[in-house]
Image (tube, rainbow, N blue to C red; front, side, top):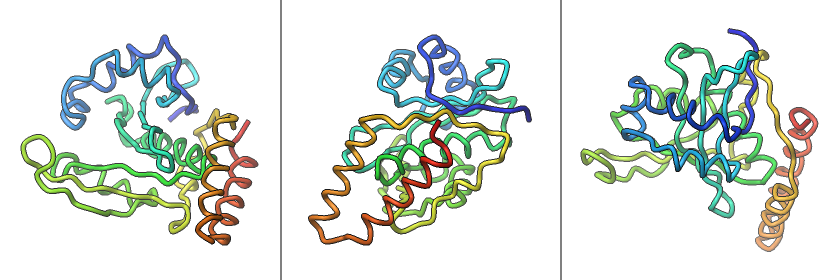
Length: 211
């Protein structure tokens, strides 16, 4: 595996990302054909990360939702069929874990029971714990398992990512505002120790990953 960089997607990469999402090996787990316009919308909102080899080849992509105040919701994730079993999904999740730490958010995702045997094996290694099971909620009447990763309860798993992955991450004013809002909420709840824990994690993340 050659050096791979994890960063936000660029506008001219959306069609290539769509091809990865819609590859037969991936589409069966992502709910069918993925349209181009939603991918463009995620890219424009800064909610789409890609894994890119040194020669510019896109080998994976991961969407998230940040519309929830204190949660980063993991959504579509897919790896190019030629690059399976290369820790790319782990690296994509690590990218968003770093961003979640910068924002003071916890992370959540969900899996369709019986639909993708890989994710229930991968998520615990990344610090996610299974939570609520919603029965008969999705296509073909399958059930949905919610997975949660809170930096206040679980150790971050940044060490799961091999050294040949690089992260291009900037700390933005929006990150600072979101983190401040979380700290204000924790203070109102009298959770001073939790505020300190998030602040220490954020400081470490900035030193280790933010360029």
